[in-house]
Length: 272
Image (cartoon, rainbow, N blue to C red; front, side, top):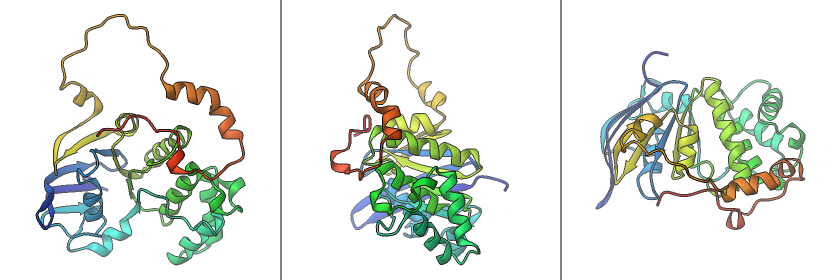
């Protein structure tokens, strides 16, 4: 494919007197991870809904995989997959049954084979015949992302994919996102977690009050501030370092349980 996978020019969207997007511009190169960073209410989800043809913009132009979101919505939808903030899995079905169901809905041949390949790819084979309701938060999210990849869409939108996950589950999802990009999938990631954008993204755009106020690589964004003075600092381990050191290996080997987002260990610092 030639040119950017996503092109956004002058996108605006208002809801009555609330101006959510006020002229958004950016490009996303194919096979890269692009992080849209912003606080709650910045307009991230609204923009994703426009790019996935769920909302119409008031002004501006956007193309996805070379197709115009306004005039070629069917082609756009065939080029993308959207994973929202909360895992959209059927908890009564097993993990494998969830995948088979989506493959059948997409009218694909050999849905069982597709399901088995995705279970293996996302390290869910052993849990494939268990009900999704018994999965941990990280496993449910990995299953959700694997369901999004059925049909091999070249572009995937991940709208705050680690919301409510504990530190161990966040790391699992981060690795999954890296693997997607390494396999050639273009990823548009929205997040309010600074460390998530810093860890994953090839480019980061900061969305604030409906406009992109800065867009660049992590190195380019850091260069906007004065160079740091070099001095000796005794670094203390963070709580996340302690938590992962103590439970990292045990958590991976322990039986999976339902994860209650309301009681999950906080997942790092948020930008508020």
